[in-house]
Length: 298
Image 1: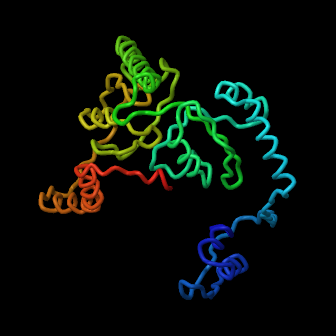
Image 2: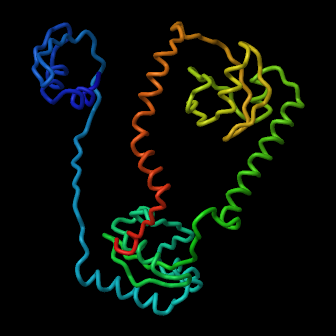
Image 3: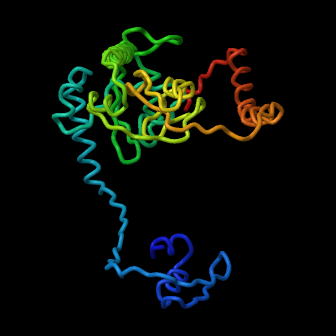
């Protein structure tokens, strides 16, 4: 038990009482949680500590600084009045360039920029190649340009091609690694780890429905294979979302609780009940073919 734990968990009086009481003596101290009887049975050596002050100040630019920055940006935009020139010269001039940002009419912010809804509204009111005026978004100035628009429905292939290419390459790479490892016919996870230049680790409480495996992530293929594996049997290489895995189940525990269909139905109904409201409303909106024109005004 540390001073920090006592201070955060209870209060300063409790901390002082605990750490000033001699060994094997009882301290009586009150807090919001009641009256505590505390007996210190063992104490380690004192550790030197320092009190540090944290000063939080808001620094606001003067009107002169504001005007200088605004005018410099305005001059830069005037000289670089096309998207190509903006992309070519923005970084060199010291400005932060963000390209390829996709926004929808429902977005309230442009990335993490505060109060940037006006930039999004401008984008939907202008055509490809347009360059905006200077927007003041809280503590930032923003100049936007429209790279293009996406029609309703599926995205064009050229827009999703890089992501699809990366996904396909990852899958092919996983297949190749799994095949090469399987051909080695190794008999232990340690041997696989050595071959893969990796290490052996253990994880508990994995079942078919595990959402995320600790230290690994979301791996449904691994969940399924683990659920079907025999204890103490080294698996074949398993291709997952984040890598290729070889595992061995070292213990299997079964839930002693008997399956109760009625209880299971109640639990599922309770977990799904909160979805009914917004899913029903959205279904009604879709079926009514409501056209959302709020971007014109907000």
